Amino acid sequence: MITYSVGFVLIFLTFFLLHLHAYRKRAELELDEMEMILTNGRLRANVLSIAIGLLSIAISLFGGPQSAAIAGMVFGLMGPAHGLNGYIVSRGLSRIENRVSSEPRG
Image 1 (cartoon, rainbow, N blue to C red):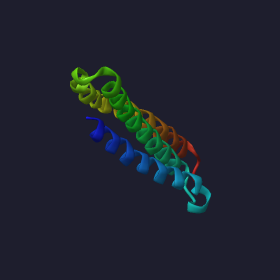
Image 2 (cartoon, rainbow, N blue to C red):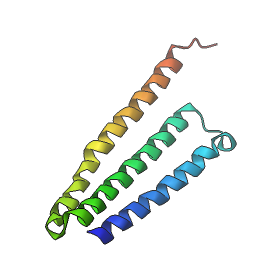
Image 3 (tube, rainbow, N blue to C red):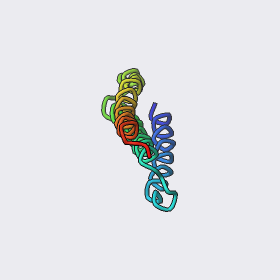
Image 4 (cartoon, one colour):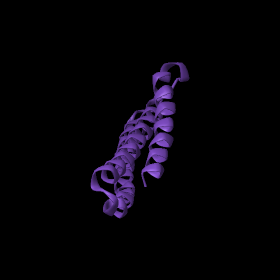
């Protein structure tokens, strides 16, 4: 389980670094407000995945051989964690859409 979890963490760390690079280049990339919310959501999603992978590693290392099943079941937290993140992102996007739709057109 440790080998799988380390690989999992490294993959999502790579994604995190790619999104962080885009975020740092936001002016150069001319990201609009919606794209900024989406980028922040992806950064948060990657951090959530990394945290879950690290939790699995910690359970495996400190729980002993009998904790292998629990270390694997920790990945079941991905659904609720990413569901909540998606909800937060959609709320941010809705606020922008509502603001844009209420602005007078000229």
